[in-house]
Length: 392
Image 1 (cartoon, rainbow, N blue to C red):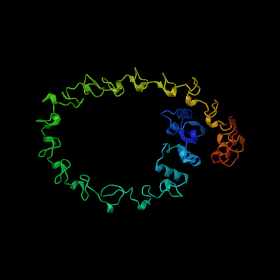
Image 2: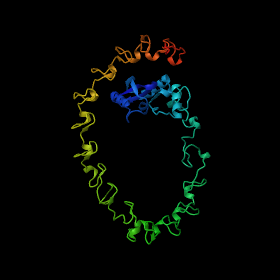
Image 3: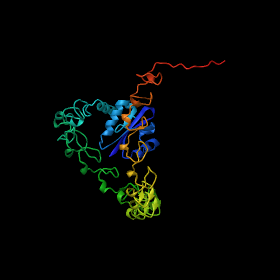
Image 4: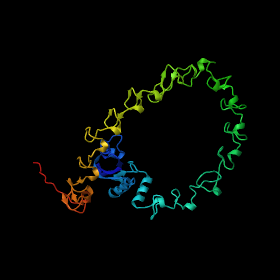
C-alpha cells in the first residue's frame, strides 16, 4: 500500500508523487532539502490537494497526465516527468498519453502492449529488421543480403578476422600479431615483448621492465607503489590503503569498514552507523525511528507523530488530513476546502472565491476584479477607478 498525492505549490504549480509515509514526505517537500523533489525545491508546496491509498503502481502516472491536462504541462511535474526541463521525447509521450494514442507508434485504437509495429522504425514486425540478428556479422538492424560486414581485427570490409593479415602490434599488413617481431616494450623490430632486454623503469638495457629490481641505478629508480623516485617497490614504506608511511601496502591487513590497516573487515570494532568504537557496523542496535540505541527499528515503541513512547510511528492512528487522532487518513471525512466534516475535498460544493455554495473552488469562473461570473481576473476588461485627493 502506498499514498499517491498531489501537492499545490506556489505560482499555480502542482507536483504528483508517491510515498509510503505521507507525513514525512510532505515535510521533506516543504523543507526543500536534498530529499525534496527538484520541482518542489523551486516551487514550495502550499498544501496537499489530493491523496489516495492504492496498490495500483500506474495511478501516479495516470494522475500526472490528468493534472497536466487540467492545469497545463508546464505547471505540473510528477511520475516519470519529474525533471524541470522536459525532453522532446517527454512531450511526445505526454501528447500520446493525453490523446490516448499508442506510446509505441502514435496510432489510435490500441495500447503499446498490443502494438504490432516496431518502436524503433515504426514498421510492421514482419518487415522490421531492428531486432533481427544477421548470421554473417551477428549484428542487428539488417538482413544478410544487405550486410556489409567488416573485419573485427582491422575494421576493413570484405574478410573475416581469421583471414586478416593486419598486425595490431606494429600496425602493418602482411602478417598476424602472433607472428610479429615488433616489441611494444622498446618499440624496435626483430624481437617480441617477451624477449626484450630493455627496462622502461631504469631506461637501460640488460633486463626487462617486469624483472627490474631497481638496484642497478638507485638514483633513476621509480616506485610503482608510491610514485616517487629513489627507491624500488620492495623498499617502499608507504601504504596505499591507509595513506600513511611506516609500512608497505602488502605488509598489513586492511579494513574496508574503518579504513585502517592492521585488521580485516570481520574483526573490526568500529561502527560506521553511530561512528563509535566497541562494536561492528553489522552488530549495531541503533534505531532510526527514535535516534536511540538498545533496539532496532521494528522493535521501537516511539511515535514521531505523537512524540511519545506509546506505539510505533507505523502503527499510529494519526490522520494527516485533519491533524487529529483516532482514525486513519482513508477514513477521514474532513474537507480542506470548506473546513467542515462529512465529505471529502473533491466532493465539496463550496467556493472560496465567491464564498457561496453550488460549485467547487476549482470550478469557479468568478472574476475577482469585477465580481462577475464567466471569466477570470486576467481576462477582465473592467477598470476599477480609485478615488484620489488632489494635493493643495
